[in-house]
Length: 313
Image 1 (tube, rainbow, N blue to C red):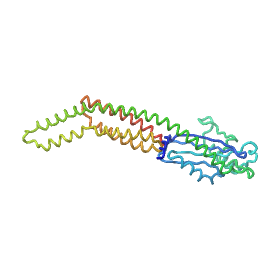
Image 2: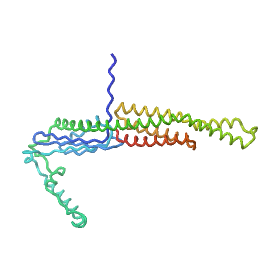
Image 3: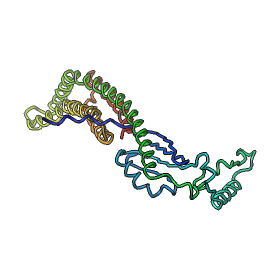
């Protein structure tokens, strides 16, 4: 029996946010992930010193599930309830923070000159990294608890990116529908366009013949001129490639996964074909003007499509 076909991977947006809190032994662990667009995978970590030994494992778990995006990852530990009384205040670090605050305050404009009076609350100091450390009898959470909490945050983060990806996919399919409609309208103009271009070819040949006696006109030159103008005027290849690239873009959206870079490349190819088509329809004939207008509609839809795929993983 042949294996069942695998289901397509969902498309993911590169923007996402998730935060999970969990408590163990009177200590709360807060894991926050947020991401924006990036050409590659760019990770920025904020991890308490107690959890730094787990950083390689956490990064491995993240890289296994996420392919692209600038991602800020923050893990924070806070004593809860009775455990707070067992926390140790790092007085040396507090003094250093206060000294830095005093130096910064001295460089700010005085209050009333466009700047508010500098003010810091004790609670603000307690939130600074390293100020409140867990005492020896309140150990940092075990590795299994940290990784489980991190995995829960990662799953929530991926769900949001997948939800955003589904919305992007719907929008991109709709844009491809409009793009296809504009291409079909151009294909319908092909016959009158070719007739107009053939008429231009006849006039061009008449210009060549009127400049010299027919007996001295090189037949090879006439054939070369006719072939060159015919090649420059034929848009069938551009329309066929546009149709093929559009179908490939749809297939990538359906397949899902890491489609952003591939779709970006296809968009460049589509833009090249549309530009070539426009360069071949520069005459003032009504059919050529209509083709130019259709080509400009293609470019407008293509630009909107390109902007949207920048958000895809």
